[in-house]
Amino acid sequence: MRRYPPIAEHGLIGDLQTCALVSSEGVLDWFCSPRFDSPSVFAGLLDHDRGGYFAITADAPGRADGAADGAAGPGDAFGPPGVTTRQLYLADTGILITRFLTPEGVGEVVDFMPVHDPHTVTDRHQIVRFIRVVRGAVRFTLECRPRFDYGRLPHALASDGATARFEGPGITAHLQAVGALSLEADGRDVRARVALEAGAHAAVVLTVCDAGGAAPPPVTMADMVEQFTGARRFWHDWIERCRYRGRWQEMVNRSAITLKLLTYAPTGAPIAAATTGLPEQEGGERNWDYRYTWVRDASLSVRAMRDLGFTQEANAFRDWLGHRLQEGRAPNGEPLQIMYRVDGDPYLHEEVLDHLEGWRASAPVRAGNGAAGQLQLDIYGEAVYALAQSGQVADIIGYDGWKRCAEVLDWLCENWDRPDEGIWETRGGRKDFTYSRLMCWVAFDRGIRQATANARPADLARWTAARDALLEQIMTRGWSAERRAFVQHYDSDVLDASLLLMPLVGFIAPRDPRWLSTLDAMEGELVSDSLVYRYDPAASPDGLQGAEGTFSLCSFLYVYALARAGRIEQARYAFDKMLTYANHIGLFAEEIGPTGEQLGNFPQAFTHLALITAAVALDDELARTAANRG
Image (tube, rainbow, N blue to C red; front, side, top):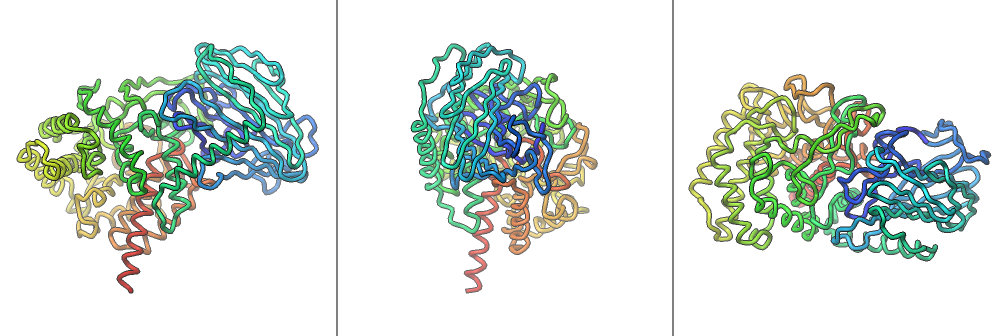
């Protein structure tokens, strides 16, 4: 196996409380338990030697010892010579299949996490790895090498050939072999080899729980088949609720499933991405922990999920958000902070895991996120925007929740006109960011609408005055007459792709002359072959070293803006090109590098929700254009 496969060469599996990444070579190199934001069990993605991994790989033909050269054969980018790998999802599910094609036969590893009772918090999580051969004969090698707490905790091994128990401080992992597999001790880890012919099966089940947890009951191959059938049924039943029937059905369904996999079901809180520490530039320092719930990202996901018909998921997050509002002041002294843990805990202490070398030596690796304490005033707009997606906001947060929401808007009347750190969490000091003012306008605009439509108590005169003052300020100080564009922050002429949200939230008409000239300016400065940079760090220093790739979220928002502006053919071409940057199974990381590689944490929820938003808008505009022609 390669020490560090490309970020994009992974698939995602999960059980709606935590998740794992499996490389296209069959190596599970990222898994945290019992939650998304818990310490890792396997973190080989961040340090191949210290992080741990769980590999099931096909042996090269003619190598009886199961060893692999690790070099690529002619025309084969991955795996040892003579082995070609392919990876796919079982259609419309979260079940991942890695195929190994050799001259001697074709084998498959089917990976999934059973979804038992996703709304009940549990410390016990299972990964099922089902091995089968569909043609000829294939030899497989298994290596299970857990490294608890990001590789910082030791563990002891107890194994009898059919089972293995990895016991660490506070955590235990049980591995069960089913079929012809026999587990052999390899130091404190285990290894196994098995040769299977067409029609033969084997399986392993990894169960992770708190220390001292009871060993799982013995399992049979029939149990494995039942688990597989149950997982497939769960995903098929869920995706049937999707009401999107547009031109990009497969990609939209995959994005919806990805958002579901990245949502903590017990609270309804989605995380920003499955990983921490993956770099925005190989070898760079922009390596953050995204395993938390951003008010901004999650709030904007409400519209995407409602557009698809997933109202249960949208309402679950809004309920979570309502609880955050009612808790009162966050540790930073504001009514809300920008991110929380999935259970609502606001404390996200950031530490550097300096014993890990990082993906391809991209250090530092961080756990926790120090940006949680930043002042980002836009979150109030996104929060009210999410709550206002329902015609009856009181049905979601109740009367007490509305009163708290009104108190926050009263507070915002006195506090919106302050410099802040901005949407991109830069560490270059506070500024008067136009996007922050834009979303404060949204907060008042949606608050006024909800109070009026639902006859709720509110200081409408005060809110209206604040809303109008914001609009005037943005139109004067946030607009550059020289650039003929809205700019990143006041008293500058730097462009910022976050402002692509202006027409989506209703601040400006999508064909307003000011907006069309802003689109033109962005196209000339931030857009590169339909890919969009967030901003130019050279023109607007952000306090960090290094560069970054184009931001996939912004590329999809660009498609949305083009479509609503009536530039349909340009939007469709940009969208179709953007889809070519998805990985082999339809997943996107945070950014796209200069040679098309995916960079940053993976997969990123923000990108997938923007893909849905762009696809829905494009379908609408294409249908409208066709109707007008008819």
